[in-house]
Image (cartoon, rainbow, N blue to C red; front, side):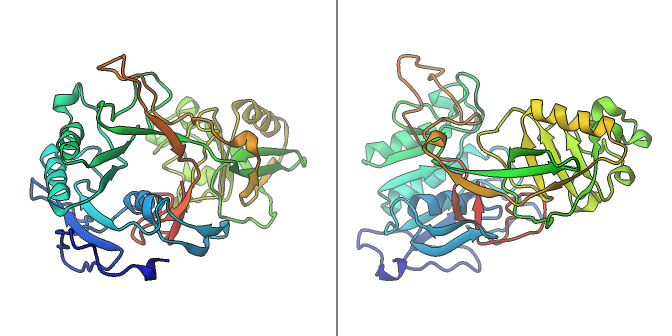
Length: 376
């Protein structure tokens, strides 16, 4: 479908700048901004996406039709954006490793987008601001609307607390996430043949092989000053790699940054009730199960001499009961400044979406695995 696009419209005044970046009839503009002039060593000093998020959201909005798309076999099918024949112009004010970005960069990006002749501005990012007049996205969007250009923004991923949304100015279109009728499940099986169904985006296949399973609280990094009350969460530095090597680890937190391929662990089971309506990708075979099921797994570990388990590759299930729910992570309203203006304005599919991904960004965010697609 993208091949049917001809030259950019006559009204287009944008350009591409930066080294090693070439526009085409789909991506017709590209700019980057860094008011401070300083860059980290791993930054790509170009409009290119360095972690995948921008590529993912852009392809959801305007990606062309692609057949046989999948993440290592998961979610296989035809992918397409909401408006596949739309053009894309890239304005990059956000940089790798930064929680927020310079307001001057955001405003400069808005100014250029307006001058270039865009029809709509989409921003899947936000940062806390006390009011409209200290929020560069709100200020830029106000100026854009004066020229008839709507700014569509994400509500944010800081839910489920009230007033947790980032983009709430009245002139913004603020979109919350919602689920679809598809959900990815990842089963684990214990050595006693009991199976628990969890969630994750697990592309790994242990081929039914069983491995020893250990509770994170029983593998503290004592030499590092940690005990079981810390190591049960499996957070960075709390686990003894010698004790978890070759084993599946049961953890009580989603912040499992230590459990990479270098830790020696074989897999990961997380017992946590948060985010059970979404699921994440990890660098090891992994599944997140409800806390109640996690307690059953821990009981099995405690009363079994040689406890073992396996983790299966994720599979997708379609059912209408999964659809049209606002997930745990999606930021909630109401508008924290003007309570009588409801925000977010709409919800749209934003959970476990297969879409394009940058070749410089890992789907998990913690290893060197690359793919053209991701599910997030």
